[in-house]
Image (cartoon, rainbow, N blue to C red; front, side):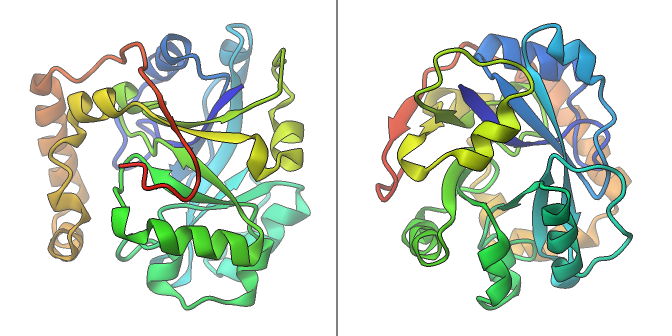
Length: 265
């Protein structure tokens, strides 16, 4: 069973993936379950369309909490109260028997551990991203492993895709599941252990599909400049780049499987 627990569509301010492109990418790349985690918005895609094609659509959201730190909530409904308190958000996700993930932990301005010191709330998280497709974090790998071990978090790889061609470039396989049925993802994720997780990276696809120029985007200078550029202007130039870059369609994956504690890059 292969899952991608962090993705965006055109409903996010910086996303460009359509529903059809997301489904196509899942089918091409063998993704059994995909979590759609729009920025501060709930998933509005047609879950039945995915279900009849054998893919489970996991409803989620990427919350911007106090200080700017991002928190992923999976298997949640629209009943989350309007609050940017990380404590309130995490507790309401858990109250719905949802799953809490810490994405890109040390990413400047939006990583939980880049914004906040370690705190007791981390015990409420279920997973932490060791690999994030939009944030190469070689120098933080050891720190993430340490946090996961200290707080009993499971480590996963997620694409953080904003285009269809990026879906599943980084993903997680739950081993030992012979047959996956749509609707079972929540139970599997709640009961999984780290020993049952394999982290997958399609390194050739990662380089080919537009991530080769992301080196600047992980710098502090980029994170300072980005908020100064209006969102509409950013979207306009991204659309031009994506249209002419030839990176619009997903390819068959060539996954490397790596062990936790080894630098995946």
